[in-house]
Image (spheres, rainbow, N blue to C red):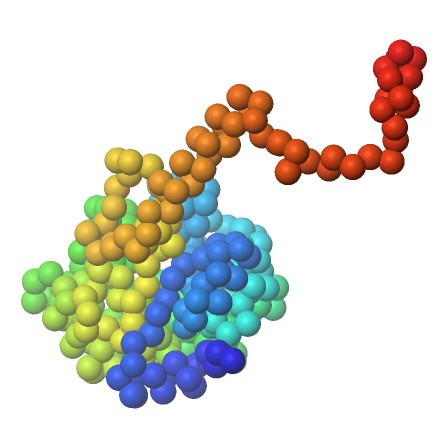
Length: 285
């Protein structure tokens, strides 16, 4: 039987030098597959605003939506550790707001932890959430909720001053109590240094192989999209599920229009009524 992933088992993996796998999931079906595959952690990311809802960024996602998607994922996971994103403006206004919304996510879903973006500026929120008994995954480097401040989705930590800022952000969230930290779009040497300097589990997404683990968006790694869609540099396609799905839709469409589906093998051919009955029914109506 697969072993249940917990904070303790995940931190033990870091101590042993074992890598931690993480993917995003947003629904029961896909989360169930990831759980069965042995994925250590699932992030129900506010990236669902882009992948599931078609927005250009993550900002429109609400707490109610995170609860709905998170609850669906949580029901699917028997062994995988589930982390829920706190959406934009669900924690920035105050420490009290952050604790209240983190508590809501934990109470109304089957999450094991919450994630929030930012370094030093959200350290008080992280500290208060952890002191409330809620595990926290931090997120530094390129933080999508602040993309407008960066001028878009751009690599962070380039240059000495910016590298120092990202490192200090990571140290600040660790001191506040975060057990894990996503390092997004930072130079590999910087990500490796942060991994060395902290006890937190570091999860890279565009952070290189020196992190304790990696996360990819499911739609990116599975090729669920259309030809010409933007693919970030750090994404590796592990399957071309989008092509398989497109081919399946085309085949279904062709058979429906040709009248070859459904055939006898895919129909309830047995009837308790005789042909004579249906003939009389035809005449009556």
